[in-house]
Image (cartoon, rainbow, N blue to C red; front, top):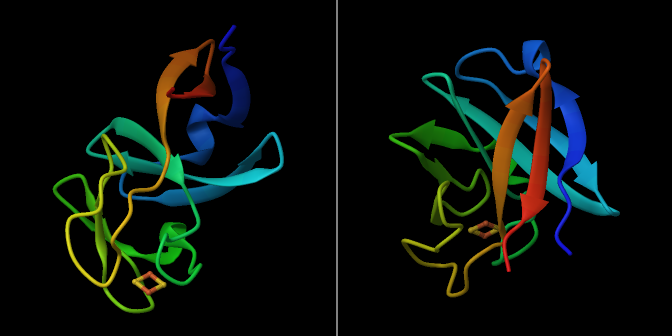
Length: 104
Ligand code: FES
């Protein structure tokens, strides 16, 4: 069964910030875009840069290393040089805690 795990306090993730956390040993990037929190795998599918260090616009993150873009809602790769998506996570907030669960 898929379980949500607490990864951060909501107050750690102010608007327009990103945070790198670990979920079951895997790095996950949290993004607060206009008050909506998204979570995708932190490691770029191209050459392993940290997506939490990328630039975000309109729920899309651009990798800081070579510029591949990923949809924050789905993890889908939107541009080269990335040719595969990254994992996406469902997010919920309860009692001030941010919880995530990897999508299957
Ligand atoms: Fe992300 Fe190359 S490492 S685009």
